[in-house]
Image: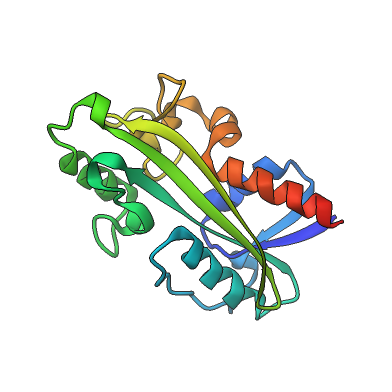
Length: 196
């Protein structure tokens, strides 16, 4: 079975990737590699940040490394929060603070102008060399208040196109089938199979 090291300590991301790969790969994350450094995300795009993480971690191990950077792009905010999604309300912000800031920024914006997308860019590297870059996105809109208790991040505010419920209401089974991360991961999985 192929081994894949995720360049993340985010257990939510790891759980999503494991669920999406359905046992086809042996997946580990940086919780199994405690000496791995924190890689500063200094890029201005999701691709740049993913590359920084994938290259840095793959230089420290023999594994195939997968790094991703993802976030929410809101059209009425000219693409913000974008690469700053995790720290939109400040460097130590939690999901609740980020969601509240987003709602505040969108005060008075009518529903038809609350279009947005989740975007994810994944980079696969080995021994400091980028082997591939993959992207996925899902279009939707931002609600005027949080709905649902599942998921994480902006999930309670984001309704994907074709649905009436937020990601937080849809549950992981549906979300993992259509999310930005799922779409990028599908490309990664197909690429890995072709590399066999």
